Image (cartoon, rainbow, N blue to C red; front, side, top):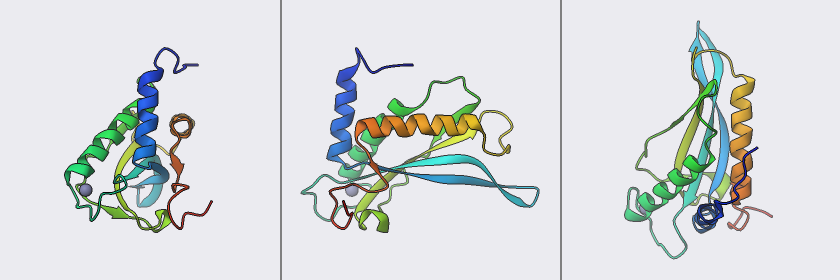
Length: 159
Ligand SMILES: [Zn+2]
């Protein structure tokens, strides 16, 4: 069991980032065609953040987007499980675009996807290690205050 003790300052900085950019997360299956059949071989954990309040008409790839992406990378690195497991993790490169998800009230989002793959035998079906890695990452995101799918205070996000 690892703790955040003795390391609470970076953790608090990450919590500030989560709040400032209203970071949410969503989980998606990763599929692959194996022998003509669609098989789930992994999991994708998508982080979505939005421009800080007061920034009007955000543009894709602007300085605010890049700042947000850098913050999300730090969060992603902080929540990754330790190396050396049967699962490995991959972060998608910055896609230079703004996404609008209805689930988050169509707010302008920058996203970062972390994929959980098998280290060996890439096409094996989803296994317990991948699910465990995901649940650990989700636990850390909750500790940091990230929103599950949507940010509570966003308009239209319910309560
Ligand atoms: Zn921008």
